[in-house]
Image (cartoon, rainbow, N blue to C red; front, side, top):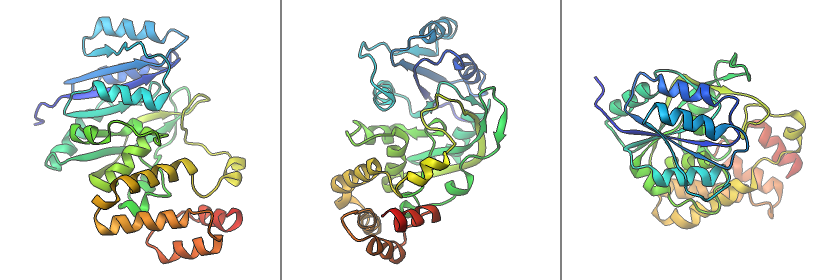
Length: 296
């Protein structure tokens, strides 16, 4: 039987009236009920705030953070929400997904099996269309099974809406440095460097695909062709983490970060970088290897 644990669910909203009710209902209908849903709206122009107020009045576990700071963007929005959370465990929620009714229960069972270690837990997701019909039963399974920082540099597989972290991890990641461009990417990197990541091999939410997704499951071919093998924003973030924490890392992780920075140093010859990759333990998808050789 699950021991009672406090869980804060953090939701950042912006013009979310179309799907917000479905998501909040899926949280209300969880089999585990000791949670608080803390919502911060980022200046919606539609009826999002009215919907939140309606649910607030019906369920005292639902809170609206009103800080008067206006539109901050998704990263700073989640940072403000994290600052407000005092729970033992923290989950993130999009405004337009639908959670499996046992999602929180399954996560907490995983916590107990891992002896309540300081961990990041995440799960797979079903991709669905804007009407909620499943179009793909697994979003990240094959990549999320990879372990270690060497499998993290060129693979993005921790989806914010599936994440649960511990309070101590929250304290570690705050405040967000300026280099954070995606909150879930930052949290993922920190977990691989200093904590432990645990993956649940189940799809525990419907990840809705529509025109307004901040980060979606689709990649247009033209974008893929034009894309460099690494994101310069990501490199800046990893470089920041290396400069700040490098001396506190175990030696092999520090070395892997140094290898990544060499592989992505565009001042060096592309063939030199490619050979650095092949000599290292760092994994890179084949398409990105081709991009390295062709685009440099």
